[in-house]
Image (tube, rainbow, N blue to C red; front, side, top):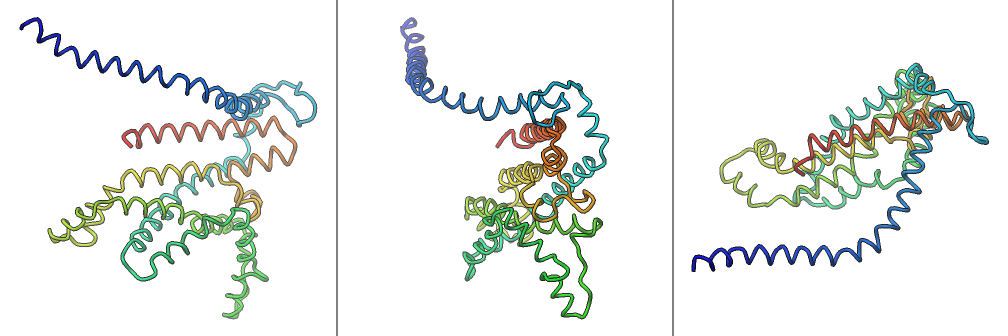
Length: 309
């Protein structure tokens, strides 16, 4: 009996290892069939362009012919010497701050409102989500007309009160604040829908238990709802940070990065100073810097704040 017992104990382990080996063998045909095409496409459209951009960044090249004038790290030195790039970097930081401190709290507040059993809640969800559905270029063109100090909505409001309307997008001290308002309006609906999904996943019995214990509305929100929405909030912040660094489509029709480069972001700076001026080597260097910033922030954030999600 003493020899049989260890054998019986080892039997389930052996069976488990056998099943795992069979499962791995069964997956190999799927891996061999689907992995190579995906790797080829990823290499062609992601790895090679990234490598080419990094290589071109060491040349003074206008995009015509083959790059021949090797200048080393001079493009990178020129980037950080330009005040327009520093301004674009600061603007991206401000967009991230406004997204986290204004846009996400607004989206969370509205999500708590439209998830309640009130008449017309579904209609309000649709209304708040519509700006996000609108194309970025179209949104930029619409708000450029709204901000127009001669014919736009702002002009009509000022005219109604007998005042001369300002041209906000032409004032370098005000233009970026106007852009920030459009960004909040455009993207808060996306975060609102994330929070609605998170709120609907919360077990109602937990909130009912808080009611029975006599918790107030604020106590329920900060002690129950918000902790249970922790993973959703972290995901929303991640999307806000990454999306802020990639902002381009809406800025170009709205301000084009002006006036005096006051509304430039990193991507519009790349387009304005690299593509439009045919400085492909310089633009490639900007792209490499932007890539390093995005990857560093994304992986650091996921490593620090989302490692358990």
